[in-house]
Image (cartoon, one colour):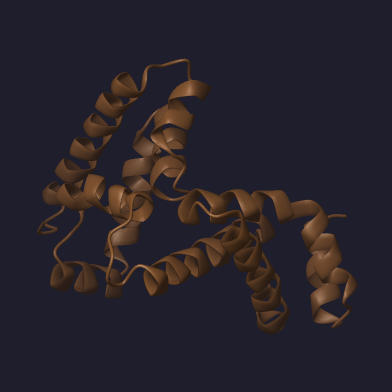
Length: 185
């Protein structure tokens, strides 16, 4: 079923919308949740929460890209779950990702101001657009979807060390782009 038809079902409050969403995007949402949570049970619950969030948000929401919208909801719910469960203990998954990005994340007060002005998003969009297709995909899959480095390396037929070096160069490039635009790190 096409995305527009699925969104229309949500707007009609037809429960078939959830089944169609599960059929078309269930695996996609599960992969996002699992890569961030590393637990099949937590991933399944998060995907279920994604369907519930979609049901509650539409209407008034009318996503242009249902896949992207569901991915964002799943990611946010996964990060929220991870934060609740790991407040006092450190875990490898999300902590590792944040550690990798620490050198190219803006300072909290600067990030807040830049976000309010919409600047940070524009800078990130421009930076991502300046990358080659493969680098852009690798960066987004690693830092947005949380795909483990060894998985990405295997998919690209690279050693994890080689891919780690490539990701370091990408993060350094992002840092330079942010600094060039006056974003304090």
